[in-house]
Image (cartoon, rainbow, N blue to C red):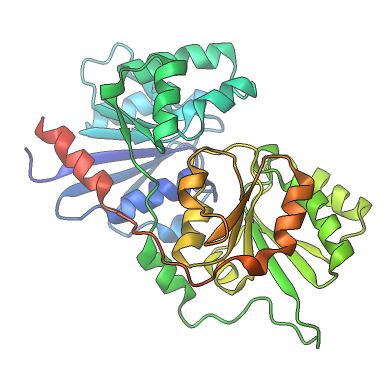
Length: 363
């Protein structure tokens, strides 16, 4: 095995999404004396650029869309000759597969499944053509990463993958970064009012998948019972911002619900919140739940993936509700004090990917 392994991580951009955060956490976990790390970005959006270590070499392809980057990707592969190429989004998987076409030199490829294959296909979030090329990409990868055991079974069923080609790895959480970000921070919810508000935080792209419309409707029921509740939503617009803000206006909740957009340091909001809520309709494995588990915050989450029942123990560290159940979500928020806030944090193994990369190179 060579002294240093050249690894390419490929993302559309560095905007604040879950896939981007997972990739950054992997990059930050790799030891400099073992890896030469390159980050290839299709676009020039850089909200999370400050989290990239200085020794990481960044390559910009300056393409508006991933589909336009295929020939640029091929040129970069041939120029730098990486040992391993890692990708975490469907469209990047396909672009890499097409870039490899007719290349004699082909690096080891690792593809991570970002979401439940079953729910992506059932919710028609992927076209027939895209699914065809994604199946081709998975078939030609050296390794496919599933975030949960259920996702592995779905990859086998819906993409016809050999079970030996799939490895289950929970999303890595950069606990050192979280500790750094919450150190010496002030309560962002502090108010001059004599009334002590109950602060609820949610985070994610403002997209239908995240179920913020369900959360807002549930919050309307909560406010009828207790006007001291406040909801803060962190996240970039992914097509639903106008609809969500209109819903807030219609329900007359402008005093109770606040949109915070992208936050460079979401962890201070998590740390000081009375409750974290995940309202998603479907997920892969939500990073924010893992982060709030590390911070020992009370959590209410939808059963958006079966693995959620492995993470949340009802009454101990959180409460679980069915997807799209507005009444149950509202009732659980009102019962947040029943959650034990002194639960033990789970162990986060953040060096699993390093071992995977080393194992692949030694084969």
